[in-house]
Image 1 (cartoon, rainbow, N blue to C red):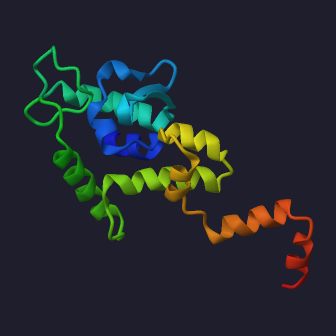
Image 2: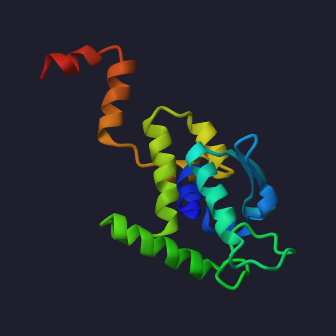
Length: 168
């Protein structure tokens, strides 16, 4: 559950999640340090739900990580850093239980992160930074603005929006 929360709550890429170390998580300031593509570092806010799941995971992690030198936040049942395949299959297995979407994989949670932020009115530049994108064009590929959101923005911002409500 902690992995799922981080994918959705922080918009992480799979490899970014795998590369997370325990000391990258700052529970006091509710943020994580993420090492993105091309070793680009960014700080991403952490929601309370994700924080609670991480705390639960850290307790459970002790059951199979006996190597006190292992710094990985997420370890497998042998206590080693999780592989990309292990993360993929674990997330896919969980998503298949709770949703009927065909593309049940970690990256769909990253897309949902961006789309839900933008649908709620988040600034595109802020979302770009949280996702770790170097260009705005890349962020726009990830966003799926709903028809309802488009209508709401139109009604709020366009000077002729009253015509839309009058025609109903």
